[in-house]
Each structure stands twice: as C-alpha cells, then as structure tokens.
Image 1 (cartoon, rainbow, N blue to C red):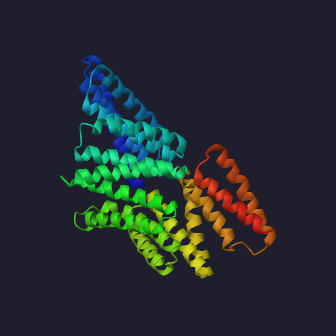
Image 2: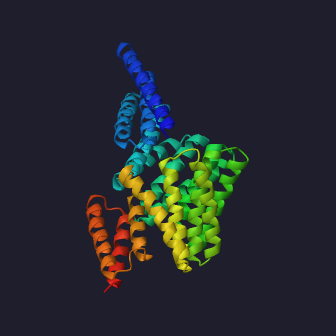
Length: 378
C-alpha cells in the first residue's frame, strides 16, 4: 500500500509540473488547444486524487477543468473540448457520490448525461457511446439509492439499447465492458424491485461478458466486477430460497478477493470481502447455522469499522450500520435483553444523526430495521 501511495504521489507531482508549464505557455501564447491540454491535465490529476479518495481536491480540479472547457466552448464549437467536458462532469458526479453526497451526485449525473446526449447525436464512436453508457449506469445506481426506480430503469435501458446498437458494427472492448456494467446496473435495479428471476438473467449476461474479457482478453482488473456479480446474483438466489447455490457463489467471490488482497489492500477490495462475509452470514442465519453466521458477520463488522472510522470511507457507512444491527439480530451480544435494547437505542440515535446530514435511502433502511427490532423487544 505504501508503494502504491508513493506512485500516486509521483503522479500528482508530475501533473503539477505539467500544469505549471502549460500555464506559463498559455500566458505567453493563449490558444484553445493549449487550454484544452491544461483542462485534461487538471482532470488527470483529479483522477489520481479520486483514486486515493481525496475527494475535495478531486472535486476542485474537476471544476477547474470544467470551467476551462466551458470557456473554450463559449468561443467556438470544439468536439474534443465537449467530450472532455462530459467526461469531467461524469467524474465530478462520481467524486460527489464517493464522498457520500448522493443528492449532489444525482444532479451532477443529470448534467453530465445531458452533455453526452448532445454529443452522441452526431458521434456514435464506440468509445464515446461507452462513456455515455457508463455515465447512465452510474446515474441509474444513484437513482436506485434514492428510491427513484422508474428513472433508474430509464437510464439502464438507454445505456443497453445504444450499446447493443453500436456493438452490432464494432465490438470495441470499452463498449463491451460498458454493456456488462449496464446489465449489472439493470440487474441491481431488478433486485430492488423484487424481479429476482430477471435480475439473475441480467447478472448472467454481465458475467458472460466479463469472463470473456478476463479469460480470453486478459482483462484481469475486471475480477472486481465479476465478484460484484457473484454477490448480487447470490442475493437474488437467496430471495428465491436457493440458499446453497448462493453460498457457492459467495465462496467463489471470497476466494477471488482474498487472492487480490495478497497483492493489494485497496479499500474497495477490503469492503468487498466484508460485504461477502456479511451476505454469506445472512444466508447461514436463514438456514439456522448460527455460529457460522455470527463469526462471518463479526469479520465483516471489524473490517467495516476500520474502513469507516480509521480510513474515513464514508461511502461504507450504511454497510457498517447494517452489520451493527445484524450483530444484535444474530444474538452476538451477551443475551441480556436490556443490553440488546440499549444497543439498538444507541444505533437508532446515531443513525438519526447521520440521516439528518446525509438522508440516503440505505441509511433510512438501516434505521427502519433497527426500529423494527427494538419494537420486537417489547
């Protein structure tokens, strides 16, 4: 991890030098092409900050790059500047989402997709369509988190439709990968709207694409996405009471993530492992294998606690609270009813405080679950 941070620091330093040089040149001979280069350097530096979860710095740089592109476009039409603008608006929305500002992300994704729609009216190159579809899939995920399921489905269907159209003529890797992500977004939406069989079909479509990219084209970085599919498909199988099939998929995902963690302790990999433990624990709980459920949930909670309170990864807060509630539900407290009540009351108070600052749907769901459990204590 230290090695990776040093590499990120080198990248930031390199982009800072490039930005300073470009600004000096622009001061001497202003030119739209040079200013676009400056915007791209700002964007690249912002992406490094985003990778290290330095969200505020990333947001500032994306906004600076967006301002440069808007000034270029105010002077004359420039397709490359417009594509750069759309990409930076997409990444700005993503940065807000990762920071935990879900409502701001919703607004920013809408603004980004609006720019992309203008671009693809006259430009349907695979890389352009892939970027547009990726933006739609992310926007759909944000809409789903806010409980706006119809709007989320519209985004998913738009992405799938245009990607299928483009891929009939040109099977570029970026478009193929974007299609798998659009299927994943649609599958997750189907799950949340209780269309479990349809969700499984969408997951299978996405998994088929990713396995081909991983094992045929060598895109090993997509293992992360494949594990996400395993988790979400297993969740759908659980809802159909196919518990042992679900456990097999969780185990496949755990094995992949543990291999990835041997090479890198990235927060997203640690979160994925925690989420796999959490979901597998739920399945063992349903089939009354209580000791296994408790042990798995405790492993998940320990990892999430470190990510949220030591690593300051606010995006994982709903998952942390979910596991806190599961700990009470699985009976991992000392069995004392007063202790259980006190634990639930503490969770409810803290959740209400968090929701007042960040009213996302997943935190509200945790609050409702905790309140229902507390009511059952009466």
